[in-house]
Image 1 (tube, rainbow, N blue to C red):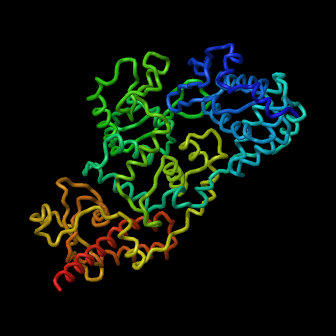
Image 2: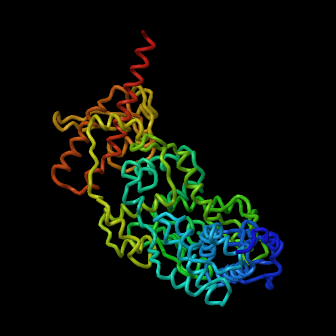
Length: 530
């Protein structure tokens, strides 16, 4: 074995790069140039730009370094940027292994021991990533590079890598990473609707969050969306106008982005918000020149990693994929929705909303093929996890639990008033919201609707979760709570489907929140009076 001092014969990698790189520029699979003349390769991409810094790598063997540089160039020419990133991530685990370093310094072939040391660094749920380690070794061996033994390649190929673990967060119903439960997603929807009136979120934040909820998209397609993907279509039926959006397909093997699309229908509520966002974007159109595309979720400033005159110039105002999840998370944080399960602010990512979208579709009776189409999967293997969930389980909810969870549910969005006279539109008897007492066959007023337009939703069920509702302090909210809990139990006793039983849960929590708030106000007043 060579003396470790032999390392002095091999200066830092950046100083040796030119010796190994005859090509100064290569063209990737999308037809875009990549400068590979220096120690840092900057790989531009519409949604996933990355830098490969060879200065971070310690490969004390000219042969292995040459082979690895050639391999990375091969990947960038023939595979996606994501594939190159995955390979780089995995290879960095190998390059620091003691057996690998020792063999390189001695000028020997890479032993299988180096491979096994790298494998040990991956937990079971990450072992699928070893595909790229094996791909690198096989390719370098097939190209005839020294230090890559066919026998080691054969031994490595006998190892069963397996696929990635699918759906661990989904199956475990993880309260931090898994799909949202009904009370959480309804509370989020209600808070998002209220934001339209309160202005706590920008239009871009509202649209981005609504699209995640309604489409179950990954971050990549959302980053690639453009204004002209949105359409308003006049319908011949009672709908009047139909809103739809073309969602760019992602990870389908296309060399160039925005090659394939899936058309998805949007609700009128979301469609009108998208319309408003496009109008807002165009008010600022002076910031976008004719060479740029018009992204739907537009950046305020152009990206510095994209040259306006280059092949990616049209994407200068598109967000990177890595920027979409923070955008969604920040929007939810501003809404200040608390999880009834944890009592903490709801943590939401685009991925969690995708899980939620899928699990709700399954509960509504979607077949595997329908779900695969909705999630834009080309096969069924990745969606089986959603059908393994026990989605028919109904969470227990009684009066005591409702009163405990109500204050943290964020389900009540209105404003409590002392009496009808203090309410906005309180002078109009037609704005009263009533509870129908079936036993006494009487109508008892609960509060006042502060909206100046007819909403068409069922009162009082929809009212307690509406930002315009003003419950009165002396109204019989306890009776309304008791009535809804009885209706829930009746559905449970009748053996109805879980989603039908849980239909009123968010309203139950909202009423409970009102009851608790009124109790707190009275206790505070009594304490101050004493």
